[in-house]
Figure 1 (cartoon, helix red, strand yellow):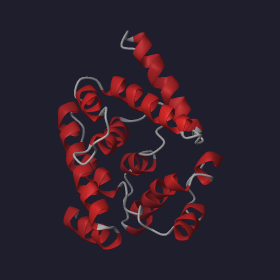
Figure 2 (cartoon, rainbow, N blue to C red):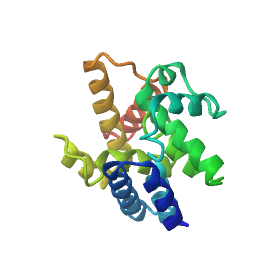
Figure 3 (tube, helix red, strand yellow):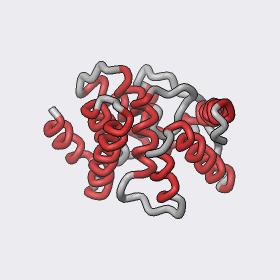
Length: 192
């Protein structure tokens, strides 16, 4: 099954994007092992998270609008987020994946949301910390992931929101809600 997924996504992705998907899948597998999550589900969700990333924007928009997946207005106004919805639809409709946890992990890997499942957090964090990531704080993010997932979520969400604001970008409601949720958890555990 995994080999057939690899073959399918390889056809639709650039070499760089395909390699990124492999790196994310590998990272998700490692994080899943650390926290006792289903390793196979983590690998599949990581592998498929960007399955539609290289689709032309007009086609992506059509996929999003026809997906029957709830999409907030900010996402509709942010083409860089469309691939997550389209990749979720692809996994569900074309690959026949019915595991809602895998589908949600793919769906929310760009925007996050409050009270994410363990798998959703793994894919969100696996994407931002994969081997090919080289931004300044990636080392700190990787350390946080392997010490406390909720602290890592808070740190990454703050990083993402700050970056969006510095570029005058819109921040999806689910991202703000996720930040508030993980801030509250961190405060209750004295981690913030």
